[in-house]
Image 1: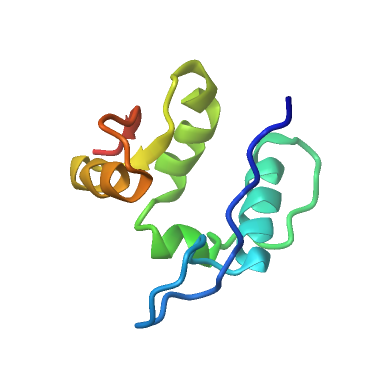
Image 2 (image 1 turned 90 degrees about the horizontal axis):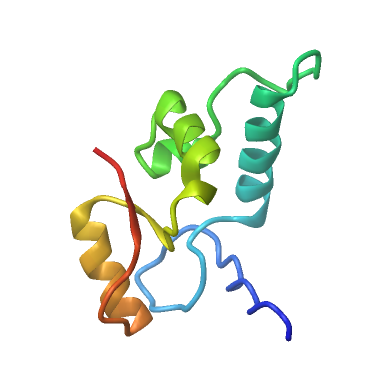
Length: 103
């Protein structure tokens, strides 16, 4: 059995409907790299500046790093606020989603 494929990165949102993750792949890779460097002592960081993708998601640094260390302990399939869960259920055609709740 293989894992399901990740949706394609479609870049910044536009007015025309397109299916995919509304971020650039480079923004995502920058986030992954930056996050990993926060946990590896002695690793040089490209920048201490928070990645743009976190700003677009309205996450602060502390909140994001907390999510990264506790996400696997939960069975969350989405990260966001209660209104985001409603949207995710509709988009995913699910009756329920396990939400890692941001406050």
